[in-house]
Amino acid sequence: MKADGLNLKTGMSLYIQRIRTDGVTEVLSCNLIGFVEGQGLIVKPHDDSTLASLNVGEKITTRMSVGDSRYAFSCTILTLNEQPYTHIHLSYPEEISGIMKRAAPRFHINMPIRLSLHIGVDIVSVLISDISSSGACLLAESPLGGHADTLNIEFRVPFDQTLLTLPFVVRYVLTEQEDGKHYYRHGVAFQFVSDEDHWQLNQFIEMLINKQYAVPGVNN
Image (cartoon, rainbow, N blue to C red):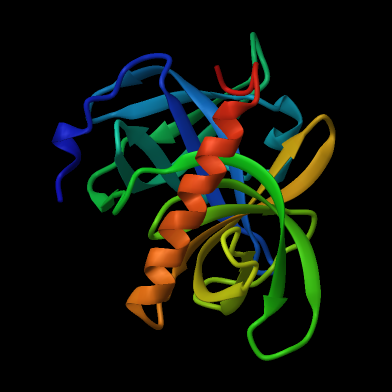
Protein backbone atom coordinates (compact mmCIF):
# COMPACT_ATOMS: atom_id res chain seq x y z
CA MET A 1 0.00 0.00 0.00
CA LYS A 2 1.33 3.43 -0.92
CA ALA A 3 2.40 5.68 1.95
CA ASP A 4 0.60 8.74 0.59
CA GLY A 5 -2.10 8.54 3.28
CA LEU A 6 0.17 8.34 6.32
CA ASN A 7 -1.09 11.68 7.67
CA LEU A 8 2.19 12.51 9.40
CA LYS A 9 2.19 15.30 11.98
CA THR A 10 5.14 17.00 13.65
CA GLY A 11 5.41 15.91 17.28
CA MET A 12 3.77 12.53 16.86
CA SER A 13 5.35 9.44 18.41
CA LEU A 14 7.21 6.93 16.25
CA TYR A 15 9.02 3.73 17.11
CA ILE A 16 12.15 2.55 15.33
CA GLN A 17 12.34 -1.23 15.44
CA ARG A 18 15.35 -3.41 14.70
CA ILE A 19 16.29 -7.05 15.32
CA ARG A 20 19.45 -7.57 17.35
CA THR A 21 21.94 -10.33 16.66
CA ASP A 22 20.48 -12.32 19.57
CA GLY A 23 17.09 -12.34 17.85
CA VAL A 24 15.38 -9.91 20.24
CA THR A 25 13.45 -7.04 18.70
CA GLU A 26 14.73 -3.69 19.98
CA VAL A 27 12.57 -0.56 19.95
CA LEU A 28 13.69 3.06 20.07
CA SER A 29 10.99 5.56 21.01
CA CYS A 30 11.15 8.79 19.01
CA ASN A 31 9.22 11.91 18.11
CA LEU A 32 8.77 13.15 14.56
CA ILE A 33 10.25 16.65 14.52
CA GLY A 34 10.14 17.28 10.77
CA PHE A 35 9.48 15.71 7.38
CA VAL A 36 9.33 16.47 3.68
CA GLU A 37 6.73 14.32 1.95
CA GLY A 38 8.34 11.94 -0.47
CA GLN A 39 11.87 12.82 0.68
CA GLY A 40 12.56 12.07 4.32
CA LEU A 41 11.71 12.06 8.02
CA ILE A 42 13.59 13.66 10.90
CA VAL A 43 13.08 12.02 14.29
CA LYS A 44 14.47 12.72 17.75
CA PRO A 45 15.02 9.71 20.05
CA HIS A 46 13.83 9.92 23.65
CA ASP A 47 17.09 8.33 24.81
CA ASP A 48 20.07 10.00 23.12
CA SER A 49 22.47 7.22 24.19
CA THR A 50 20.79 4.69 21.90
CA LEU A 51 22.08 6.55 18.84
CA ALA A 52 25.38 4.66 19.18
CA SER A 53 23.68 1.32 18.43
CA LEU A 54 22.41 2.47 15.01
CA ASN A 55 24.28 2.60 11.72
CA VAL A 56 23.96 4.80 8.63
CA GLY A 57 22.53 2.75 5.78
CA GLU A 58 20.77 0.34 8.14
CA LYS A 59 17.23 -0.60 7.16
CA ILE A 60 14.79 -0.43 10.04
CA THR A 61 11.06 -0.81 10.60
CA THR A 62 9.25 2.31 11.73
CA ARG A 63 5.92 2.04 13.52
CA MET A 64 3.31 4.64 14.37
CA SER A 65 -0.16 4.71 15.88
CA VAL A 66 -3.16 6.74 14.80
CA GLY A 67 -6.20 6.06 16.95
CA ASP A 68 -6.74 2.31 17.11
CA SER A 69 -4.74 1.69 13.93
CA ARG A 70 -1.10 0.62 13.90
CA TYR A 71 1.10 1.28 10.84
CA ALA A 72 4.47 -0.21 9.94
CA PHE A 73 6.81 0.82 7.12
CA SER A 74 10.44 0.35 6.18
CA CYS A 75 12.98 3.17 6.19
CA THR A 76 16.74 3.55 5.75
CA ILE A 77 18.88 5.53 8.19
CA LEU A 78 20.39 8.32 6.09
CA THR A 79 22.29 10.27 8.76
CA LEU A 80 22.87 10.17 12.53
CA ASN A 81 23.37 13.62 14.05
CA GLU A 82 24.41 14.84 17.50
CA GLN A 83 24.63 18.55 16.65
CA PRO A 84 22.97 20.96 17.21
CA TYR A 85 20.78 18.29 18.88
CA THR A 86 20.40 14.53 18.61
CA HIS A 87 18.29 13.54 15.61
CA ILE A 88 18.02 10.86 12.94
CA HIS A 89 17.34 11.44 9.26
CA LEU A 90 15.30 8.60 7.73
CA SER A 91 14.31 7.94 4.15
CA TYR A 92 10.65 8.58 3.37
CA PRO A 93 8.60 5.35 3.40
CA GLU A 94 7.55 4.15 -0.03
CA GLU A 95 4.88 1.75 1.16
CA ILE A 96 2.99 0.86 4.30
CA SER A 97 3.93 -2.74 4.99
CA GLY A 98 1.24 -3.39 7.56
CA ILE A 99 -1.93 -1.95 9.03
CA MET A 100 -3.44 -3.49 12.15
CA LYS A 101 -6.49 -2.60 14.19
CA ARG A 102 -7.08 -3.98 17.65
CA ALA A 103 -9.62 -6.79 17.71
CA ALA A 104 -10.89 -5.61 21.10
CA PRO A 105 -10.39 -2.60 23.41
CA ARG A 106 -7.43 -2.83 25.77
CA PHE A 107 -7.68 -2.07 29.48
CA HIS A 108 -4.60 -0.83 31.34
CA ILE A 109 -4.10 -3.00 34.41
CA ASN A 110 -0.83 -3.55 36.27
CA MET A 111 -0.76 -6.76 38.27
CA PRO A 112 1.58 -9.74 38.74
CA ILE A 113 0.51 -13.00 37.11
CA ARG A 114 1.85 -16.54 36.83
CA LEU A 115 3.16 -17.62 33.50
CA SER A 116 4.46 -21.06 32.61
CA LEU A 117 6.12 -22.43 29.51
CA HIS A 118 3.72 -24.32 27.29
CA ILE A 119 5.70 -27.58 27.42
CA GLY A 120 7.53 -27.18 30.69
CA VAL A 121 6.99 -26.55 34.39
CA ASP A 122 8.87 -23.26 34.75
CA ILE A 123 6.86 -20.51 36.41
CA VAL A 124 7.77 -16.86 35.89
CA SER A 125 6.25 -13.77 37.51
CA VAL A 126 5.32 -11.13 34.94
CA LEU A 127 3.21 -7.98 34.85
CA ILE A 128 0.12 -7.35 32.74
CA SER A 129 0.40 -3.87 31.24
CA ASP A 130 -2.90 -4.12 29.41
CA ILE A 131 -5.37 -6.85 28.53
CA SER A 132 -8.34 -7.45 26.27
CA SER A 133 -10.58 -10.35 25.34
CA SER A 134 -8.21 -11.18 22.48
CA GLY A 135 -4.72 -10.51 23.83
CA ALA A 136 -2.49 -8.74 26.31
CA CYS A 137 0.76 -6.89 26.82
CA LEU A 138 3.11 -8.57 29.29
CA LEU A 139 6.19 -6.99 30.92
CA ALA A 140 9.12 -9.04 32.18
CA GLU A 141 12.80 -8.63 33.02
CA SER A 142 13.80 -11.26 30.44
CA PRO A 143 12.32 -12.51 27.14
CA LEU A 144 9.46 -14.96 27.67
CA GLY A 145 9.63 -16.27 24.13
CA GLY A 146 10.17 -15.30 20.54
CA HIS A 147 7.80 -14.48 17.75
CA ALA A 148 5.14 -17.20 17.29
CA ASP A 149 6.18 -19.08 20.46
CA THR A 150 3.23 -20.53 22.38
CA LEU A 151 3.08 -20.19 26.18
CA ASN A 152 0.44 -20.61 28.89
CA ILE A 153 -0.94 -17.82 31.03
CA GLU A 154 -2.73 -18.70 34.27
CA PHE A 155 -5.59 -16.80 35.92
CA ARG A 156 -7.23 -17.58 39.25
CA VAL A 157 -10.97 -17.25 38.58
CA PRO A 158 -12.39 -15.07 41.41
CA PHE A 159 -15.79 -16.76 41.51
CA ASP A 160 -14.81 -20.32 42.39
CA GLN A 161 -10.98 -20.03 42.61
CA THR A 162 -10.42 -22.51 39.80
CA LEU A 163 -7.27 -22.04 37.75
CA LEU A 164 -7.91 -20.90 34.19
CA THR A 165 -5.03 -21.75 31.86
CA LEU A 166 -5.02 -20.06 28.45
CA PRO A 167 -2.46 -20.71 25.71
CA PHE A 168 -1.28 -17.65 23.80
CA VAL A 169 1.01 -16.90 20.91
CA VAL A 170 3.80 -14.32 21.23
CA ARG A 171 3.36 -11.82 18.39
CA TYR A 172 6.36 -9.63 19.20
CA VAL A 173 9.04 -9.03 21.83
CA LEU A 174 10.30 -5.47 22.29
CA THR A 175 13.04 -4.11 24.54
CA GLU A 176 12.56 -0.78 26.26
CA GLN A 177 14.44 1.19 28.87
CA GLU A 178 13.12 3.16 31.82
CA ASP A 179 15.15 4.72 34.64
CA GLY A 180 18.25 2.98 33.28
CA LYS A 181 16.68 -0.48 33.47
CA HIS A 182 15.87 -2.70 30.49
CA TYR A 183 12.65 -4.67 30.34
CA TYR A 184 10.86 -6.70 27.71
CA ARG A 185 7.40 -5.93 26.38
CA HIS A 186 5.53 -8.89 24.87
CA GLY A 187 2.46 -8.59 22.67
CA VAL A 188 0.45 -11.80 22.89
CA ALA A 189 -2.75 -13.17 21.33
CA PHE A 190 -4.90 -15.66 23.23
CA GLN A 191 -5.65 -19.04 21.66
CA PHE A 192 -8.99 -20.16 23.12
CA VAL A 193 -9.72 -23.86 23.46
CA SER A 194 -13.42 -23.36 24.24
CA ASP A 195 -16.14 -20.71 24.50
CA GLU A 196 -16.07 -21.28 28.25
CA ASP A 197 -12.45 -20.11 28.40
CA HIS A 198 -13.35 -16.98 26.47
CA TRP A 199 -16.26 -16.26 28.82
CA GLN A 200 -14.10 -16.83 31.90
CA LEU A 201 -11.48 -14.39 30.61
CA ASN A 202 -14.09 -11.70 29.96
CA GLN A 203 -15.42 -12.16 33.51
CA PHE A 204 -11.87 -11.96 34.84
CA ILE A 205 -11.23 -8.69 32.96
CA GLU A 206 -14.49 -7.24 34.28
CA MET A 207 -13.48 -8.16 37.83
CA LEU A 208 -10.07 -6.52 37.40
CA ILE A 209 -11.61 -3.32 36.07
CA ASN A 210 -14.17 -3.13 38.88
CA LYS A 211 -11.46 -3.78 41.47
CA GLN A 212 -9.10 -1.21 40.00
CA TYR A 213 -11.63 1.60 39.73
CA ALA A 214 -13.03 0.84 43.19
CA VAL A 215 -9.74 1.98 44.73
CA PRO A 216 -9.74 5.78 45.27
CA GLY A 217 -7.14 7.59 43.21
CA VAL A 218 -6.39 4.67 40.86
CA ASN A 219 -6.78 5.80 37.23
CA ASN A 220 -9.35 8.40 38.25
